[in-house]
Length: 286
Image 1 (cartoon, one colour):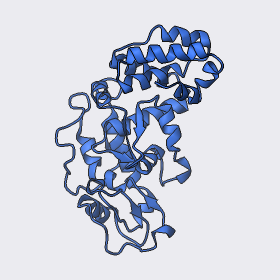
Image 2 (cartoon, one colour; image 1 turned 30 degrees about the vertical axis):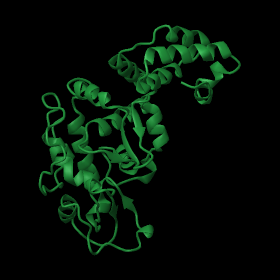
Image 3 (cartoon, rainbow, N blue to C red; image 1 turned 60 degrees about the vertical axis):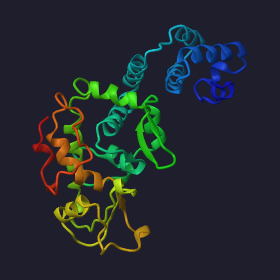
Image 4 (cartoon, one colour; image 1 turned 135 degrees about the vertical axis):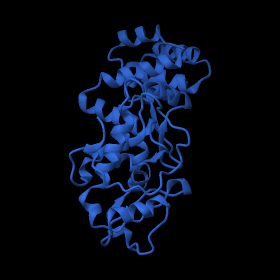
């Protein structure tokens, strides 16, 4: 835990500026409570950075927990205390990261979070910046700068969210399935040519809009992880869609899962064949 790191924290810096003793106190107590675990130290600092006064900061310092589940509970509480727009965005982001069958890259996640169930077509202006997405999630999500994957902050966080699947996130899989179907039924896909890469083969999920091809045919392309031979070479001039491969491959698996009884099914990297995504989101259970 470095002094400079605390000074650079955009929320803490106003409290520790010109207060060397407080800065040292934060370093000492966070380091002691974290006991060498970087994750715990990070969550402590994230929590402390929400305090709006020196008094509240000092009080929080005296009550730092050593239990990771308590730290995760506190992070969820911080999310719930945000304004409604931030809270809804955070809960949706956590759902799409904690309960999907493979990690999503930044652009795929941004598209997923832009989906509204009453949408008829994709609106690029509905996409959120990744910095905001991470910020509203109270330290529970991180972005791997090397491969641009967004994931939970630690493997213990996955265990934590698996337990929440029977309560707070009991409808996670149904909602993801509905959002996938809304996405796949966007008007732009009804008269488009799809070209997708499977993230599991080391590339990104992406659709380039070109000439006419049905969504059922696009599902066949995505399910085998192949790229259409007729895809346009001038992709810089085309709209790009990154969630398409995931949505076509896994929407049906999400629709079949009852989160209360089986939050993360075994064999989550498997594929359910080439089921057509032309079903309606309204046909799924609430």
